[in-house]
Each structure stands twice: as structure tokens, then as C-alpha cells.
Length: 455
Image (cartoon, rainbow, N blue to C red):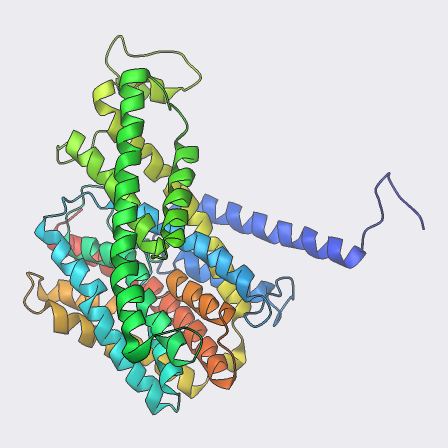
């Protein structure tokens, strides 16, 4: 065996594949970064580009990314789980309206009443396609949550964005990734993979009441206590400076870990932890626009030279505002990597054979029937304009959350021919949603802002 250039022998095929993988991903990241401003003027979202790249990398073309839901469900579950956690925390930080603000009425109804209606309608569609009740409920539950990451054009543009449409879609995406969990557990229970209890008592008592309320309480308590502690240390002790990334990941992990250990929903806990951090900032800085504190604008006498950098120069009164902004900036950067990772995975999993009349019917039924009916049914009495209601009905993007729940179900025992159909239907729905919603988001929302004169 010959060792060349002082390197140990390695399988040439494995090395070649890895090198090609690095080249493709590196070029993709650089290309998106360099052309982002130009691309935003086109009706093509970044997610669609990632999907195409994933498909090319997948087994149907180049074969460099060979993950399968039936053989790698736990790995896919973990990857998408981390993606959802980061995006939910970021969404919580984006929403600055006080909790008693009427703005919250619409996202709360969309994440609860509209979700129940969507699950009911999609369950009916699944039954009409020959699925068992358990598989039909599972299909409906996996497709029920909208996405907090994709089509960012329809989300709030800044912390003080009070546009009712964008706030509602953003809040809905943050809430319903957690509120979909009870329906997923119901579907698994009907398939015999989860204990529902006599007459469904365990599902109602544990999976609905306890898991939802406990997740909300744990996330809010930890987020509030964490934020107050960091603000105190910065104001009074000049400590915990310049470690926003560590603190952010620590809070996400802690909130999720405590929630799961208490048998509650970690997604809701992480979302409410981010929301609590933003509410602390709002209480400390009740102005309409949260202050941003660049170093050169800091008051005279506060500029210091320390390892903490800019964080040390922030006036004590604005410690919470700086922390919230720094944490949000960090999570938004992570969110872009999350979007790329998950869409590459979805693209690599999709096959041409998945596009059948039945799976396409599921996708179109969700986007053009179930979603509009659910939105109109629960928002007719709310102060939305006709345009806002139509756009809310259209922009029910499916993506990262649905991919997680699909992997979760397979990892927890869902299998068989009907599960294979559910997998294909969900992947086809995500692809069509990314293409249709992503291609319309930029031009439609640009026209919406111009007509309504909103930022």
C-alpha cells in the first residue's frame, strides 16, 4: 500500500464525494451571499434554489446526499428539530407588541381555531383518498403548521412592525409549530404508536392541556428570568458582556431541555422564551422603536475599551435593548443556515415518482381549499381588510415544521404503505408551497406595501 504526500490512504470515492460536496455547498453559499440583493428583485426565493440544489445532490441525480426517511429518521428528526428551535426563538424575538395588544387576536386564532379546521378538512381529504383514520389524522397534523422561516417577505420586517397581515403570519408561524403537536400525537395514537388513554383522557389531559400550558409557562418563566438576570449583571456588575451567541444557544437549549423533561412541548417553550426576552426589552424601552446603539453613538464617557467590545459601551439604561438586538441578529444569521440545511434535505428526499395525482391533490387541496376556508372561518369578524384576509389565506407556507413532524412520526414507528403515501404527500406539498408561495411573495408583498403605504 502506497502512502503519497505523507497522507494516510483513504477511499478515493469517499474523498471525492466529500470534496465535491464541499465545493457545491461552498459555491452555493457564496453565490447566495453575493447575489442576495439582486435575487430579492426576482420572483425566486432562496428556498427554491436550495431545493433545486438538494435535488441535484440527491440520489436521483448526483447521489452525493443519500439520506432517506425510512433509514435515517432519527438523524433527520434531530436536524429539523434544531432548525425549528432556532426559527421559533427568532420569531418570538421579532414580535414586540405587548401581550394585551389586539394585534395578537389574529395569530392566536390562526394558530388554534384555523389549525383545528385545517386538520379536520385535511383528515377528510385523507379519508377520501383511502387512508385509515390514523394515517389521515397524521397527514393532516404534519401539514397543519405554517412555516416560521420560509418566505420571509411576508413576515414582520422589524421589531416595531405593526402591519396586521405580517404580524399575524409571523405570530401564527411561531405558535402553531407547537400547537400542532397534540394532533401529531393523536395521529400516532390512532395508529397504535402512542397511548391515548381510555376515551382519550390521556391525550386531552397530558398531550393537550398539560403539555401546552406547561410549555408556555416554562418558556415564559425561563425567558423572563434569564433576561432580567442578564440585564442586572450588565447594569449593576458590568458582567455577561459580549457573549450573546453563547447566551442565546444556552437559553434555547435550557428552555427546550426543561420542557421536554417535564413532558411538555419544547417548541412552545422556546418560542415563549424568545417572546419573554422581547417583552422585557419592551418594558425597559417602551418607545415605539427599540433603540439601536452603535458604538459611535454612545454618550460621552461611556466608550470603553475592553474585551467585551461594543457591549461594554452601551449605556446601562439600554442594556436590554442592546441584548435583544444582538441576540436577534445572531438568530437571524442562524436562521439562514437553517433554511439552507432543511431545504437541501427536502430537495434530496424528493423523487419524481412522488408526484402522483393523489399527492398533488393533497397539496392543492391544502393550499386552495383547506387553508382559505380555515382563515376565512376564523377571521371574518376581525379587523382585517379584504386584501389582508385574502393574502393571509394564500400565504400559508409549509416547510421546516412539517418536515420535522414527518421525521418525528417515522422515527416513532410510523411505517407501511400508507405512511409512504404520507411521506410523499408531505414532501410534494412542501415543494409546491416553496415554489408557489416563494415565487409570489416578493411581487405580491411589494404591491401590498405600495398600495397600503406600509413599511
